[in-house]
Length: 111
Length: 110
Image 1 (cartoon, helix red, strand yellow):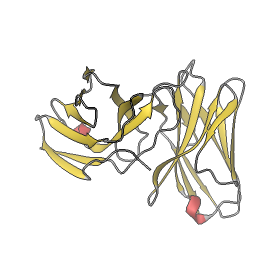
Image 2 (spheres, chains in turn orange, cyan):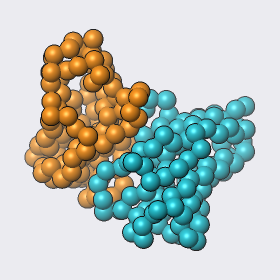
Image 3 (cartoon, chains in turn purple, red):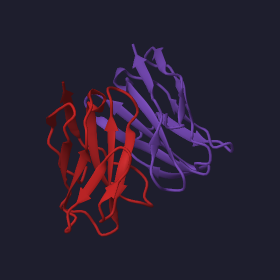
């Protein structure tokens, strides 16, 4: 158990819909990272927050957005969903900018 | 793009040492070598990391060559539960994202 929690575990929705994925980092960790893992693209970095501020962006679509709240939990919002957004979404956290520890992931299925 | 090269797959007999190689010939002086593994579709699990000295923890040992252009992850007594995809990643320790390559799929066989 890494100490990082993600909800929900599974999410099934339809094209065009909007969903929110939630991540609670390990106690005391200030940094949160989001990654997407699809069958054809492997694990890809989406976005990083540090103590509430966006710090780095990766291959994140404009339809996707994220934020980190004062209690340090983070949410990833995915809108206008397409079939190709079906993937595993992982959150990771780290103390300062060190070793990242991953949560169990949310499996998103878009029908 | 990932800065590392790993064999796509390896087999190991249960109880034997698993030695997973990684090439990172363009590694910079301030970049660390990190190893993660992913069992089935679970979240990647941190194993170990190092800069230039060999490292050991309760899970594995990391051997980094003197020129730092390659490394080897050693699982001393592999079990069936070590079957996973192993990722070697280079990253500055104060940096952000991890760039995952394709990794090595390790199959531990009875």
